[in-house]
Length: 406
Image 1 (tube, rainbow, N blue to C red):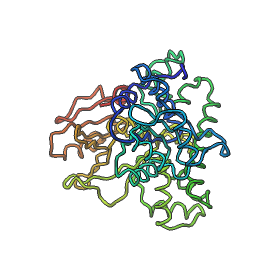
Image 2: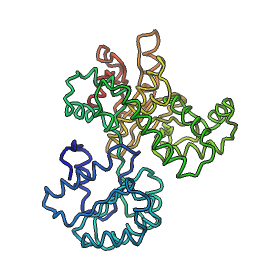
Image 3: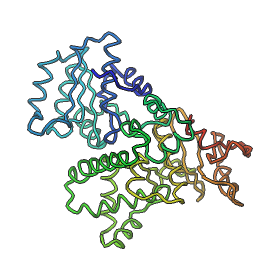
């Protein structure tokens, strides 16, 4: 087992606490977010806790040549030849969704009493197929790019002595995929090539090939449109209009299906619009945020006026990593950028890059002031530490918030 793995304590703690629970654990995340490393760290944690290595089966399938990849019977036979499948055994299957009938293998291991963990880069396919096979006896754990705290730790492990301001600039520019975070600061050209390679792999394998798309140019144009539009509401009609203007004539139904494919590949996460009165989602335009801002900045050339969208993307993803469920909030037509609405935590967040222009502060606070409950409300902005709180709304500095989100 590798010794150079960098710990990710939040995930490791979650996996240890989930061990032994009567559910198949699904680690779902975009490619290159560190799912394989997490399984290897988990194996180390199991061994340190006293689990015998002979009780653990691990295999990574997506790096095997197709001709070497087992079929369903071969997978079951291989597992049973290496571990005694039953109570006390741990079966870790990494990116095995391309094996026909894989869910039947998982079901058989689970029914035999084994503790089963699988990873995949298409959450809907994994969860829906397993839900059918196991009648809902599965637990999905989202795996995301590094938080800023994790990113800083990765950089320190590489000997980087940069201050927080410099690290945050890089975090916003090149993103926080683990492999990219470990690359040298001076290798900007290599970082760019790495990001291009990661995006192409995700796009080709998890969008084009998985969905058997013939017109790759059309969905590639849609992807660029959505990446350019982070922080803005996107409707299928506006997206269809954009594609038509680029000589990729299409219809809203096709655009809707393409957006679903990009979401299923976990390139984007959707921020649905919640109504303040009913707490139900409105059937209206949603916002979409990139899983990794570095991929976005590679796919579309950043512009000076992108800063609000980039800040929103960072805040959205940090909240999602922390709480899971993040939405946009509609207060009688006024928009609050984000609401976290979970059983254990509820709070509202407005994000703004610059509140110095006349009237901006008043405009940004108005939606928060319109909310009638007493849950925490935050305006996250550049230079927020220099401004007093207003009517119970905390005004916090963006740079400081990203270092320790709440």
